[in-house]
Image 1 (cartoon, rainbow, N blue to C red):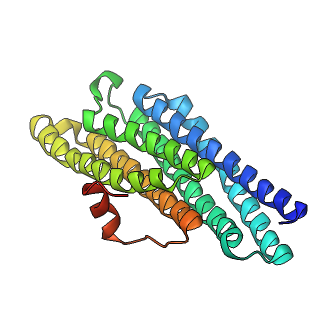
Image 2 (tube, rainbow, N blue to C red; image 1 turned 120 degrees about the horizontal axis):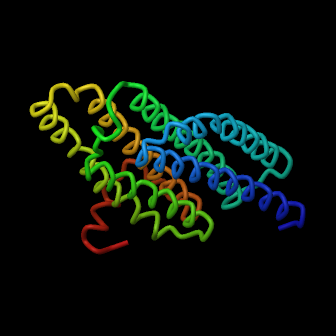
Length: 232
C-alpha cells in the first residue's frame, strides 16, 4: 500500500468521522430541544442542516476521486464504497433530526401550553436508545467492530417495539382528552422520526459489516436469529 493511498484513505475516514460527529450533534440537539420544548434550539438544528448536506457531497466527490485515481480493490474498495454509503445514511439521519426540530417548533407555535405537553415514557426511551445506537455505530466504524454492529441490528427490534407503544398512548390520550389531539399527533410523528433514525443506524451497521467481512447482510433474518440463540 503506497503512502499516497494511505493518506487518501485517512482523508476519507477523517471526512466521514467529521460528518458522523456533526450528525450525532444534530440528533443530540434535536433531542434536547424536544425534551425542553426549546424553540430556539430547534431552530438552530434546522439552520445547521445545509452543512451536513454539503459534507455528504464533498465526501462523495472525494471517494469518487479515490476510485478514479487509485483504482482500489478488495477491502480498500469496500472501505471507499462503504464510506459513501455511510455518509448518505448520516445525511438522512440529519434530515430526521431536522424533522424532529420542526415538530418542536410546531408544538410551541400550536397554542398548547408547554405544561400541557407531556411526552410519553416510551418516546423518551426510544429517543435515548436511538441516540445511543448512533454513537455505537460510529464507534464501531472507527474500531472496525462488526460484532457491535450485529448487536445493533438486533437492538433495532426493541426500538420498533417502543415505537408501536406510542399508538396505544395516542389512543388512550385522545379518548381521555380529545382537545389534545393536535399535539399528540405531532408527538406520534416525532416517534416515527426516531424510529427511522434507528433504521438508518441499522443500515450503517450493515454497511460496516460489509466493509469488514465482505458479507452483505441486508434482509437476512439469520442475523437476528443468531443473536437470539446467543451466536454472533
